[in-house]
Length: 330
Image (cartoon, rainbow, N blue to C red; front, top):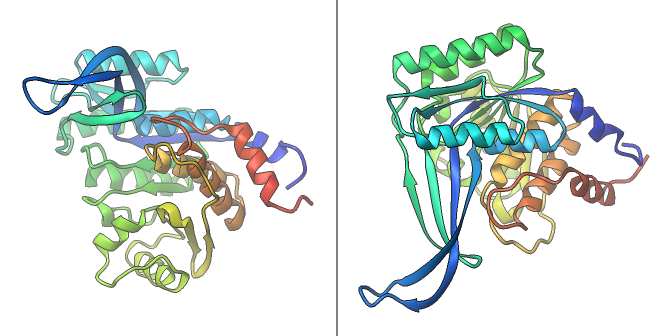
């Protein structure tokens, strides 16, 4: 890469179709000065509500922060929080054309109560069952219309096991991408882990791998290579990326692998780091970046957002500076 941001400027050429579970990350912020007389719990003097786009919508924010164009597809409830989600998306310049509002489910909201920077409790309101046949039909119709009307360079499937990525939706979206010769990147979860057949890039984390494979998996290159080979045998994917928390990131391309350690960071909050990693990977995949560049950028981006409290998108300029400091400029 050259000593300028030209490669990063190429992100602007990429349109990413994102399909997955969208939600609101809600932060109730206040202070604590006393313990309740009713129970041994802190009393929060509630001062502020901060709603942020979460789940696959946070992926869309990261795609947008990189300079690429996100097309977000998901399902929310036909309720006040669903309306709030759509308003937040529009305020942040995200299209809601691919968002279905359903009367058959509630909008997923993760509410965190904070005293200063300390999280006291998290309350989740959600429907985690699979979409109904009616919901699947409406969502797939919107996805196909977007794929017909826009030039898409990569499809990203972001699963949180909240029901949007049912086996039917997974199969149909991947089939549409394969028919159109569009690469696919997947961030899976436990429930439909093995349903993502024929995808281009598959990105589980170490915990998910250990839950799915019969052999023990350790954060060393030989063990991770064996895990990647087992995944490739079952899914037929080209790339396997395994995030390793504080141990870094592993990337395998059909048997050739890279293990990238983490950079020293002052960790404030790991929320949303996986969203950032898959966002960078998807854009880099669309641009045909080399595996080492892909792994290094994703690792830096995931670490960067852990330095800030709450779910936040990547800072493109900071990412460039950190990347430039680690590579030999040609």
